[in-house]
Length: 268
Image 1 (cartoon, helix red, strand yellow):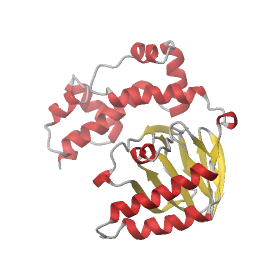
Image 2 (tube, one colour):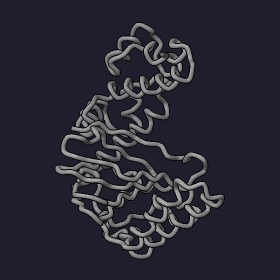
Image 3 (cartoon, helix red, strand yellow):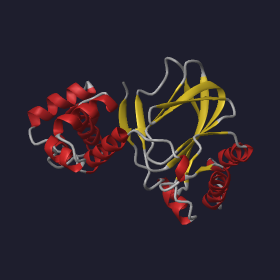
Image 4 (cartoon, rainbow, N blue to C red):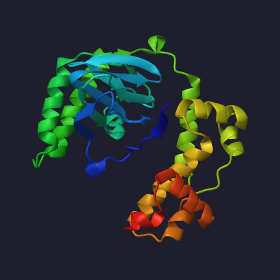
């Protein structure tokens, strides 16, 4: 069972309209151990070999030339039983909405073939690492070309939308709340009330979907944020308090258990 991570791409770096990640490798023994989800639209182009993507638990096989569209807020995981390479494009949500192609209210085909998108990926790769004075504008133009292709030729209308396991929606809502309020006191009762379930049912579903308990997830995320603060120069006790730990002894034990290191080692 994989752990699930919420990723935030709300403000892309340097006002870029996309994140472009070429030549990501996957093998049977070299795969991410996390599923993830985010609001942004994600497009994966298989460039070598073959593999698969889990979309809300449903498997989509892909091979060279295939394109996987990860729709907004879909829990996904990319893996391979053999060698595979793929290129990943994550599109700025603000650009989608500005173009009146609101990906959060639309659903695109999850497995497609599109010469237009393949060619545009090549254009984006050439632009992305360039120093062209019109770099941002050129990338916006290329990304809009992809959005238009999806909207015109690969939109799944509402009556054909696949059914999404409601447990995913409940767990995603829980994860989002934890990530936004990790520095506050969080109880199982408050989380259960938020998703209209008793704490025992929520705890069981969370464990089934993420592979960890709610408490384990909260502590792991708090430790992750504490590492960021420590590396930025915050005192260890200050980082602990700002991340929701009010007992230094508990913080140190939890931190060592979750990361394998002491907080002071990250200062070095």
